[in-house]
Image (cartoon, rainbow, N blue to C red; front, side, top):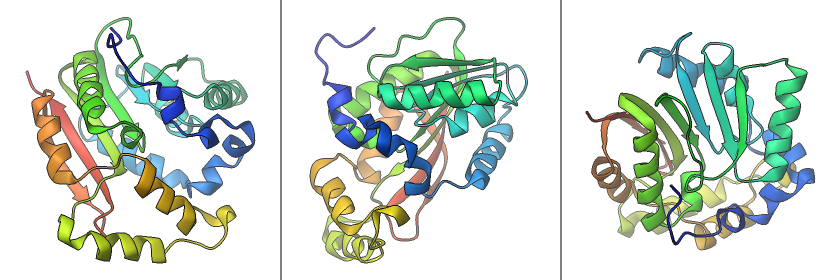
Length: 236
């Protein structure tokens, strides 16, 4: 059930995610590499992902991971709050003749799951669009959709440094940004992210995961303290 009071997830997604022109260049912008999908599928397979599995891709973007996962499991639900992203997923699924992907326009707080509990959930660079209060509610909703011992693979911009180190780590991240938006996120775009979006600290997110029903099985932090990947199992 959607919370009785909830934010406008479409507005929080950012105007660029609603722009079909931006969506058409999304994978180049984000530095998409097919090996990323292969690596992440191997992580899932190490925890039992296979032909009988159901996976929910929260914030599926252009559908690259959902389509790759569908070739190895029974059911994939690919959801995104952006109509332009949903259209891109629909096009990709049709072009690649993938019958077992269900495409839904919904957000972390509005998706209503049907059918049996999911075995796996995947969420990449989506959670940071929500403030921490809503992150916690979103994680609780994901946990409610998963079967006991179901797995959440969460990747996002997560800060694993202390507040006193923020200038050093954020400064190094900004300094490493490409000059052209065609090559990735520019310094100005990253500055906007830090200023206006809701990436949080690892030492805030990790208790949040625990309080919403997950046990952290493993975590990997990016070398600059900017990114993190969590493998989490639903308790029970």
